[in-house]
Image: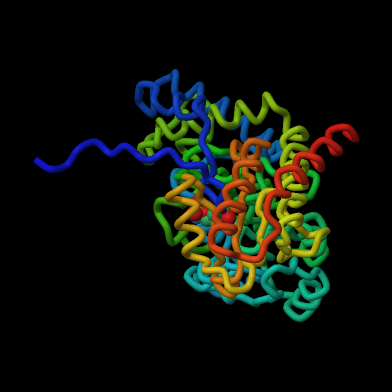
Length: 398
Ligand SMILES: *Cc1c(COP(=O)(O)O)cnc(C)c1O
């Protein structure tokens, strides 16, 4: 027998997700497994729905976690709202818009692409032009917080535009939920999905989703069966629908749900506004440190996501060597560039439990050390003081 228990190394996670999971959430996950129809578990599910409604700022009755990661939340939105022959306007300004296009096409629908450069936000003027050119479009789909670039699009304006042209909206809030404002009811979002491993800081594997009454009406009037049995909301709702008569659909990932429940409880205890402010302030601290070292950001200042900082790699620096040294010598994970930005940028996450001054200072110190030792032309020894000074100033002002 050569196998033994797997003991993962203790890392600090400052990439595009997963983020650090707190001891409190890990302990919740380790509690005893009970049956998925046990009345005690069902009580937890009801409370989970309330906590998710708070996180999404919605009263939508159909608000629940899909039993699979963020990509399954994405697929849940598309397969339930689209039918063969439909047309959907899909905005792409990074990796995840491309995944939306795949979903649309696999539903037998046509994707009308609205493209913007990586690092830029979705341009509402282009979306409006597409809506005018395609009056028969059924919905508009876009990524609120593009994790591949660190750009945040104006969800409120995009949803307004879509509604003006009688379209539904699908919004990817995987990275925004819990980090920056996501106001489902106020903005009128019809279908939204998120993930657990970004700013909620629970383990990966679940996808919170929420659907408006308007979206539900469209689902009820479908002519074709939803192509996916597992993600068909009319079936899933038999289990998550609430009330006493929950029916078996699939065995819920019970312990993962304990973890998500605890993470959402922590978010409620902190308060959404406070969580948003925490992400904004630590982003400014990290930014001050990175800029003092000589780094430049990919995204224009007003469009930056506080929880995902994409910076250009200095000339002549070996991307992979730096990241592997950070991991091996400092147990620190940061993200590589994707697609058009591969090899050109690093993505530093400040998500959920990974968003603290400890994380900011740890990351700046490790980056300074590794880059200096490699002979990179950065300004050494100034980053942490700059970050601390910026943070103190923000704290005083708030
Ligand atoms: C991470 C992410 C996803 C996919 O989530 P998984 O849990 O990896 O399936 C989708 N959209 C965005 C914007 C993301 O950041």
